[in-house]
Image 1 (cartoon, rainbow, N blue to C red):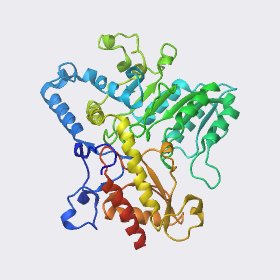
Image 2: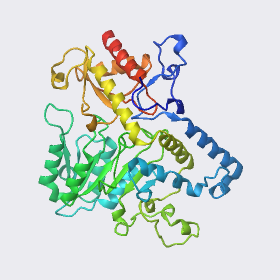
Image 3: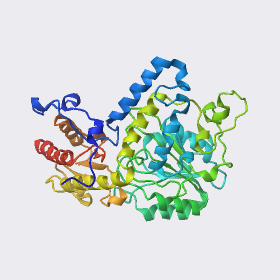
Image 4: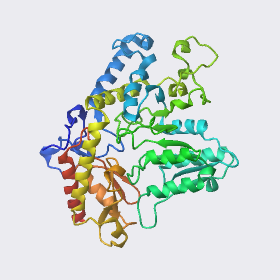
Length: 438
């Protein structure tokens, strides 16, 4: 019986064994789909995205500049993001006016920090997870330095307890309670890129707001992966990319959220003409009158081909019923993968991981489905050896594609839109085969 709702696998183009270099797969299976469990890094290609991109190329060829207002497929480029915002709002919750598709992830992160990180001599600290994604760490440090503060004194990084792999909710809340009067900004990733932990976004946001802190989130690994209610949780701002679980393609356009409560209070500091009111944008008025809400933060006109690619994916999400049914299927697929991995003779419980001397692995992602998305992070043992590299190469030779995070982690992420029970079973099977060969 299938796990939960139907798969939309036929809506996607997945890599084949030949394309990923699966040299151990039989010759007659080289053109078959590989086991692609890497949607947490780059989502698979939606067929609808291909259709829409071809239409945009056709429009460009047929209409040239006229496509901005007279589009042969009814999507004039001057309004291209307007077709995406309502669908994106359904993913992050809930008002289209609070959402803007624009730019790139780190550029949007800097833009939001320039807007909302307002340190004073008394309240200047920034609270984040230890070992956040490197781009976030670079942004945090540079923003703090630009305000004249020392990152070593200003940035509070919360790390797991000794011998543990993920953060406890009570530890995060305890730091906010104790240090909140000094914290200007609480800024976590919604889901840790490394461990796959889904941080308790609602409670962290609430605690931060209670202490007078601004609270923002980097949702690169959360958007399209877990259900989000940014408006109802009173999140101040959020940023995300769209090429992971949202399947917009490599380097796809990014997005941001600004809560509607900031309308009229936080006007865009770094204005650009695409943030100008649409009725005035092409009047070339030198006075900036921003679009109300998040879309007033737009600067340059968006890359239409990347917008079309994202639109195709979000239309597929809509076809699948958005995050409700997809989340249920995700939990079942990820739970099955976890169960199969735990049955492996090479599996070591996390509390015993540091005692392992022979090749093996543990799972450093929380076992509670409500504390993770669709990703499982496997830590290979003994740490500091070449075991992970050898396993990663071996899985690829069998057509199992995850991604590695140095020095010892492989991430596997069954995506509910296109992955199947058979994918999960194959991943567990070939992991055992490869480890046995070591």
